[in-house]
Amino acid sequence: MYSNEIVNDGIADPKLSQSSISSTSSSLSTDFTKPHLLMQSDLNYLVHNLGLSKAKTQLLGSRLQLWNLSDKKTRASYFRNKQEDFMRYFIKEDDLVFCNDAKGLVQEMGFPEHPEECRLFIDSSKISLKGVLLHNGNKYPSIPLAHATNMKENYGNIQLLLERIKYSQYTWNICADLKVVTIITGLQGEYTKFCFFLYEWDSRAKEKHYVVKNWPQRMSLIPGVKNVKEEVLARR
Image (cartoon, rainbow, N blue to C red; front, side, top):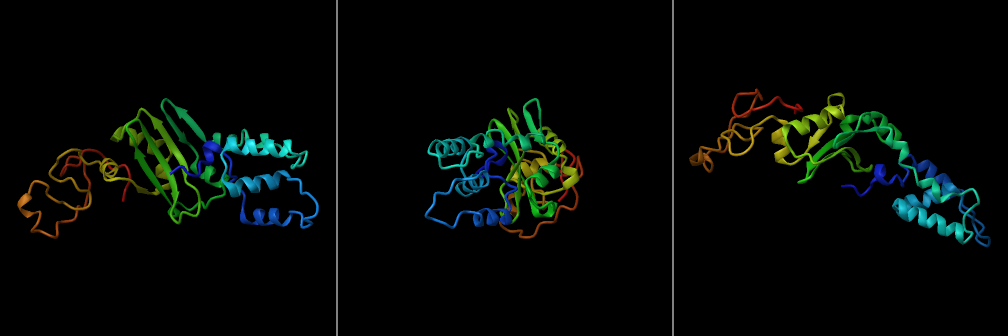
């Protein structure tokens, strides 16, 4: 999920467009009889292609300087604080770190701004809860929007996460496992009579489970009715 850790590592420059890449490659010396000293743009392009981490990028830059293979103006330290371009979009509140300006972050990274082109992935482990913005066509890297430690999957924590990233402004489609979907739709957990959010499938009517094929569709999610416990956090 975090294979392209742009915010954490801040290495592969998301604003490195195809035009800048082509212009950078075309600027390389065509005279192969002479050594080519790497400019800063050349090093950025190389790091982008190799997908190096911050530590490995600085190591590569320092080795190139040591071997006199880079220009005097090329600095390996350029990548040291690259993540600061994105840190201003994030706020830490207790155990939760979240993006308070998703639109600005998307623009900073040069991604499409249309919410319908992205989906919000919500998941958790035993000790953490996270929300990640994914591009529907997987043409762009994932964007971490929220991460919390010591927060479990429950209604209050997911409600807090959605409020902090201002989900109501963007209304991305949400992808998650069925447990998270149950929480978002406000249904009761554990073994209940109507435990499905799409249809009024009766879990207690075991004699009908292998007989009835078509169950009535659940038309509404009203707290206190048919095992709906809380208000819906995201409308389908």
